[in-house]
Length: 356
Image (cartoon, rainbow, N blue to C red):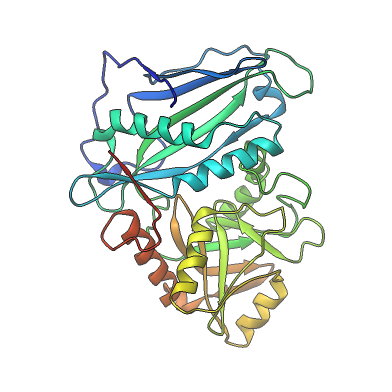
């Protein structure tokens, strides 16, 4: 069992009084978890300390060469006041997949979950009580060697910070507008597209900026070789319902293996939907739209859970999906996932982890 030293803050922050105005990712709790890695010693010195700034050398390798990975998950408060997590084991498995790709030492997954549960126990009062709000959890690892040379680091910090948050999109469950990026690419097979690493998100900012200039909320990325096949949205995996069949791009190494994506597939199969993971071109999507067979488009992700797509812009072609309304599959998935997460429906999949 991980031995965690605990130092409690002497100056606790004032908690938000209006949870309807939390926003996303702006507010942070009183404490954070930190653990060091040093070559020859391994991971050590696990501790929970007051939330505060870090002291790093300007030469820290994470600032120059991007050897950094992170995760994102949530804690939810149920009607009886208890707090629970949704599939945290999957996040920590994926974290080690990212670690392997970025040549960062693996961390014991049970230790990571134990550390997270201990931190949330201390910060339990920060978990929002308002429907739709949750405690966003950000575990991450950065390379800290003071060295401006390209090599795997010898020293790292693993940290967990917490942020009480409202809905990721200000529009709530209303359909979003998605812009298909034709010029820039996000990832290629053999690269880091399947890892949750900072560079994948920095590289997407240019496309996102162009989408915003055209009044679109997110970017739909195409494959990096032919720029033909649909891959994912900037903060979500993408699904299409074509003539009643649920289709999502297969995991080819350039797409993030989303945990909400995986859960949505399992739920759809349990409800009797035909679900297919395969390559799907933007031309096929446009043809299905022209043929009147494109029933729904939606994204899945930890932050937004389910995000229906109302408009899809590909070049000069603007597709209005399902009359810009949420579809039945999207609604079913949202109701099922949030019901399990907030404890209003039975977790028949055994996905929930309770905080004692």
